[in-house]
Image (tube, rainbow, N blue to C red; front, side, top):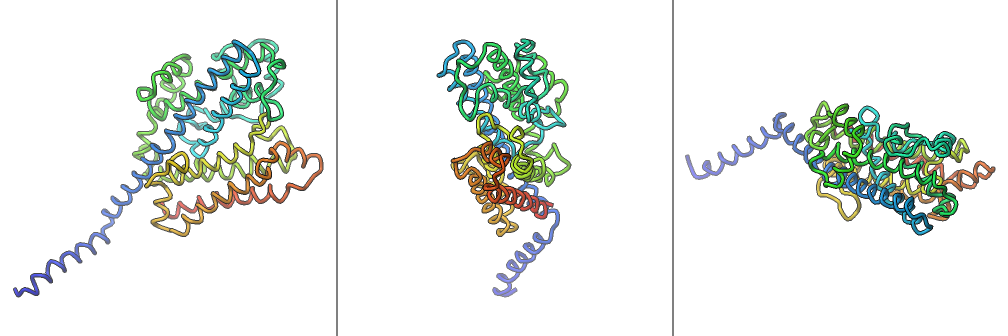
Length: 392
């Protein structure tokens, strides 16, 4: 063998090995699975769990603030309670791009229990006046349209402002603290379901154990949803890793909330001219809710919980490697959606309540901005759904 062949044959072998590797379906599948596992792990660890942890922490602050308001009512205490509600509400809305798993109707039904809308206001007022609901345990057994975020909002706010303390009755404060206990238990149990009871802070574990019915609802009745993060990261909660990744952008995930914001939250109350169907209208927080919903999509797609905590590996990474144009289009559409939702309220000048009320009173001046926001939400949902062409 001459010297030339000594260099030639190893090179040939290397080339053939490379070609074989490229053509080996098993190796391709292994590489793809590793990519999917990395995406799932970062999604859970950098977005889902930090969001639910922040929500749980905010819920505990809200509970303390509402208890303080009941113990020593004052305008300052009312303002603190209203601020605490806002803080918790923001984190809840930033979780709505992952309304699957423990939070869903097929599991713990937490979404409906804490965020049902519109309220059954007459039932709430009767319960308050009759004094039939005075404890968190009693409140937790009720349907979602008389407890949750929106009943606490109703008791704390009017016309976008904290209520004057002098206008709030003792019975209302009793109902507020009872409903808040129920709300906090649901939020803590959601974090416990994802993280595992042994892995949450001691204070949260203690709160989770306050009501045995709450504990049984998860550990006894829905134990399959315990430690959900570990199973989800490994694809064990779905038929395949591809199915698990698809959950991130599917109807239960990002595309679902994009469509819900456009059709259910914006278009329906505006077209129907029903102020009572505007979500979070007592606090005039509606447009902020919708913005935070889209931010939850941004977080799910890019990783992290805000622009300062983005991760090197995310769903965007997977999409960009396969279709850089689609990745760029999704990112641009997210930003466009945020811009057009803000434009509905003329960038903070108006609440969505006022926009819908103006339409109900005969004005069409907001039609174009509302229609533009609805359309861009639908376009974002459609783009997110096309990711399935890459994943499967």
